[in-house]
Length: 169
Image (spheres, one colour):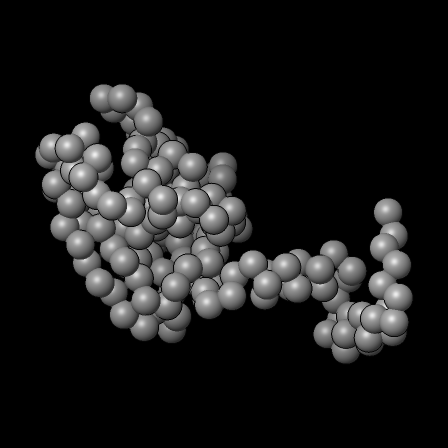
């Protein structure tokens, strides 16, 4: 339904016209600006370009370097974001998923080039683990890397003060 913007209706219409935005596009821009204050929009994807995504996160990334069996084999370093800050732009039909052990972690990767640019971590099934090396250049300022003992996953996650909250908006 329509919303009465009162005295702001003229300003809203002028903003939409000046930026050539539909009402929905203008509302999305406003909501993004409000909800993601202090964050930047990173874009990225797989090697072949079949999978593309955007993610709202800090320009200063807190990246986990896990030594569990799969992260070691894949050299999977990642930062965690809430699902609400991640958007798959293209390639859903080109993704496949590998699971093992508890099957909670969803290791998604491109069927064409095999690159995992993001996945659903076991520690944060309500979020995404994003591979910083799959982000496009220009939006990351710094990367701080924290080692996590995935070989003793339950103990490491239990003792970590913030990892479970990283996927909360």
